[in-house]
Length: 330
Ligand code: BEZ
Image 1: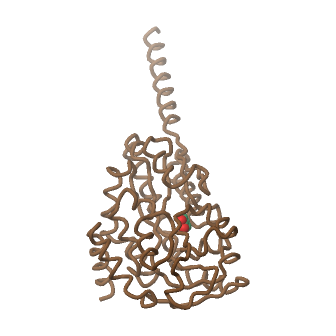
Image 2: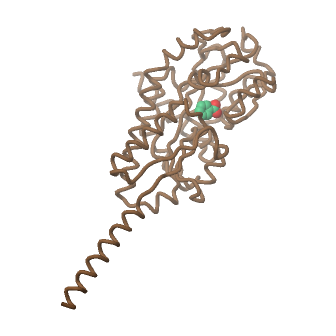
């Protein structure tokens, strides 16, 4: 009788422990982004949460903090280093501050169009650079995606490259992007995405370096009514997990997060590739916007050679990626 009661007690204790272990493993990951809720990244992060919930029977999910609510991209990297933030979807531009090799993804005219950009971001040579992230940033890079190709938007019309001289150009803070605008004689003004609309509206800047998705979301053409379709660099994203958080996860959870995140990096890239032309068509409808299409590298003189000469000293990936694209075209 006593023995039975002890056994029953042990079974009940085991069940209680198992239940509490599974409760302890329930987790809502906090994920930060600089982009607003309407952006494709944010939509895909919402979908990522649903995918993770399905894969984990509701145990794992993601709560998004959009529009720079948690601070700048640099702030979010710091928060991931301490484990205060679990995940973030950040620009490749931000990561170049700590992993200079990634600057090669911003090489001017590395790719001709968004299809080539997608191929580069899915390449082994680009993936290789993610291996540097844990040591350099305290984050784990799961995959790349993008926000399309970048264009130039200016308050005044541009007829020749010399018109860019002295122009206060908002850029995403990143040395490789700064080099491009400095070499053109412009005055680069590094500034986070969240400040760009107001800076244009109050004439703190004359022009911006931007992608179709953001131009549509923020209606920048209200204050910069000239757009040159240059496709002068691709604008990548990296899906990151705090290395501290990653190291505490079970192998099973890591595998689920990896698979789900990869799925949504892929669908982000696929959507940008599929929708880029439609976005340009939408912008053709925007009131007051003058669009000059097909502005190629030749408009910018020898910028590619000059930029490469400077950045090939910093990273061999400039050469590796140019070689990858040349092979792609063969
Ligand atoms: C930007 O800094 O221009 C930017 C950042 C994230 C998404 C789109 C644009």
